[in-house]
Image (cartoon, rainbow, N blue to C red; front, side):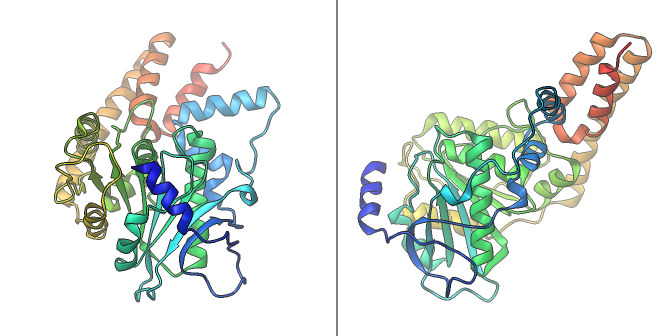
Length: 350
């Protein structure tokens, strides 16, 4: 089904269009092989390292680079060589601007799903997706920066409502989209997770800093959209949703967007439309419940930090390292900068 859709799109697509400031009126409709020109500070290698890795892993990478006398590249990608598929509604933008869905695919082609275009038109939603951003591509060096660069350029070129900028994906791309939503809540207000999700707060998906995580908890809506016959990914969703609740993320819009007779395949137009509607209706979190949940996490972290202090005071350095590793894996950026300070103490010559 996907391959047939890609072939259909290739027949419909327009010649490539370079999107540049001052290049005339922004084009609408379906465009392929779009070239963008503006880099994003969020896609800088240093910023990606800071946001995507746990504090101690980021510290280790920086030390390794310093020891090897290699520096980080300013940007991981040459933007002039990247291509994107873009759909812009022909209908004029609403008063506050278009919605924007940045899509991370599992396949290598940059395409707009043909069956979604009528929905994008009705919902006044711009869609953009990068080439060579599929499951075979590197997450940190390609898939995530490509999504950030796409958002930056589309939002600069078209009138976009900053409160309706979403990240989404299908299958493996959906799992990347969840990570982007977690680490860039200052950009994306929601995530459409089509048949792919993960728990957070672990070695694979570390938590961000307090400021960004509180923003994610308070203002990011997650829409889970998985086929009723896609058993493996439904189990993923159960684990992911439970993890979200454990970490005080309560705006999970998973009702009314199910696909009861569907296996592991891209959402159809009706389900996709319901998902877009759900993304646009974020729930206001229960402030008392959120505060109580955050206090529970703070108490757990404080107990472990106290444990490290006691171990260091007793000269039990190996045990302190073990506890610090547990803290970095489970709490990530929530434990920074204290976790980095403890690591520096443990690494100091004796």
